[in-house]
Length: 253
Image 1 (cartoon, one colour):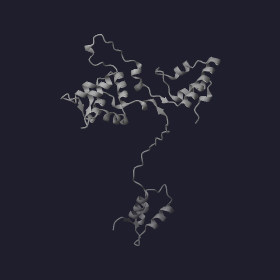
Image 2: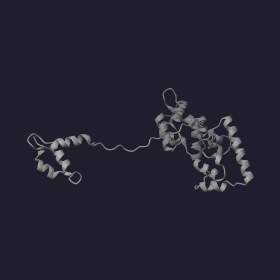
Image 3: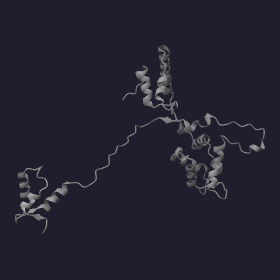
Image 4: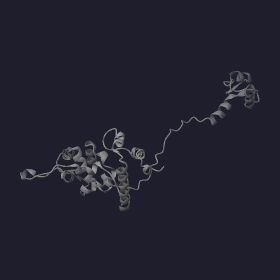
């Protein structure tokens, strides 16, 4: 049976002579010595392999633990049709022609998967969540499962389209304004009456201190707003308020 060498060969070829003293090498050789006086190096290799793990180290990962948010947001009260309408007005997209690409017979119906494809083509899919999509489909689906995109398009276009306008030349129409796209652009926390009263009280205190000490907050906020879009992060807001003498507004850790 192979896997054996003489003791002199084992000591001469041992790869860790610098790391181990000669006495330890002799002791290791005696441990794996056979009755014939040879060193069974294969048995030593098996013992070492059982301890050594050849599995790849696990990939480092950081588990994302989100803080529970019990707030009620304004967009949760808006229907899926209102969200799509505001996005269609803001992006100036035309729904009808895209739906007709999947309706060669011009019946006014398509499948639910084709509706999702149309939203993807128009770059609206990222703005419509799964819950909104599941809410939208049953609203315009008939008994055989087909989606009536004509009715859907009429509800969406009513904000900036007037059907049969050519029949009334004297009719006056209004253009969409900022309120038409507010549902898609803003998502605010809905405050309770008690919370709103606390917020108004805090706002009065801040206003009073600003008038008394003549504090100008606008330059400090603009320093944080590098893109000049009128928005900053929550941490930047705390930094500005703390730097201007409002330590009570600093978030508790």
